[in-house]
Image 1 (cartoon, protein in one colour):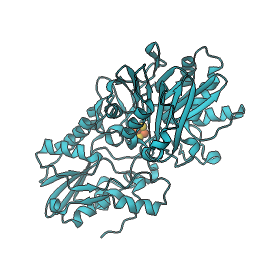
Image 2 (cartoon, helix red, strand yellow):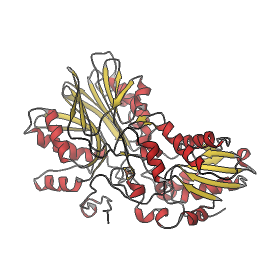
Image 3 (cartoon, helix red, strand yellow):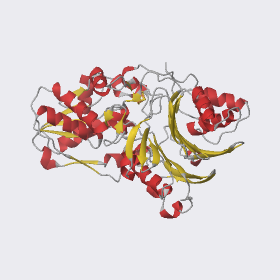
Image 4 (cartoon, helix red, strand yellow):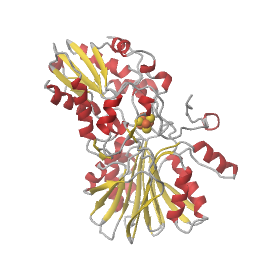
Length: 484
Ligand code: SF4
């Protein structure tokens, strides 16, 4: 067996965060319990901390901690929440900077001169360093490095000069740059905000007469709510006892939903700005099939996000689809605080091959992306060991070459294997008989529709929004590599 320098954990994009909010419109529902069910559906977006805050007439109860939903929001813990509350916000967290500090867990409940608020956020503020520095120079004290704390502080500062809470959220949003989607509650109100580029998803749904807001529509299905629409880039939606209100804080800028939501992050049963995640992944696979010229016996996908693309490839090419990979679902979550050697050992054990499906066959294997190349080498090796005669790898995204500044945790540009070798060299490195990536223009065409576009900067280097100008590494040990 080939002995690779394994680093499986860094060989994937890592999820960001999932946010959820509910405004109970007089119905007899336990909003804390609904919020927990929604978080279960959003768990794939973050496994490092979980929490719910319930707002009853401005009194907030909150349960949160480091851990997955089932570990933190146990039946006992849920008893601490006021189930008679009218509004709840909830969060699952992935932290790109591996700081498993409890202080960074969300929801973040803030008490300030005008009352209290609870906020849950997803994304990365690119002028974080500048805003934080100026607040600290004015005497502000922070307990974490989270964007949520920064946003809450800016809102609290603006609130002093604004007539309403919504006005302070609007003014704060105008000071923020980069990628953010957040839900926030103050007495009597649930508010959802999405940045003017729309980097991170945010959807609105209805559960009976009650409004719900979530990072992905799959959360609505899990609680029996109906998807209404996506929050528009630059829009603030407010739900209060008078109903639902929409305000356009800023004109939408270049439409930039993170394309990795379609490639890997979002659940296939979610519907984002450009449509069904499952269908778009299938279309990626169909596009790959159009350039396939050889002969093969089966096509299979690397679970989970390679499967939809493999089904699309099979449909387009007529080559039979096979579920040749078995994934151990109980490994690979909540690994951030483990030593790399243990983490890599566990992730290596995560996949196994059904030998009977691949022995003596020409196999096409579809994966969603290649970062370092270690996982691809491992997968090709598994297929060879299981007796595959030929292994042809197809990737349902283009070669990854650039950093992300908008909240996805990728390995660094200098480590990306596509910056270190050609596609042909990479084919040899991973041991495949052939290797092909999805063309970036084809990928963009598949996703873009009706003027709604995507960010694809980590493939093309075209950053639609400003990237960070200041580096926070020295003072706060935050790993942000500035654009050269
Ligand atoms: S740079 Fe890549 S990972 Fe980051 S938001 Fe854009 S598409 Fe997503």
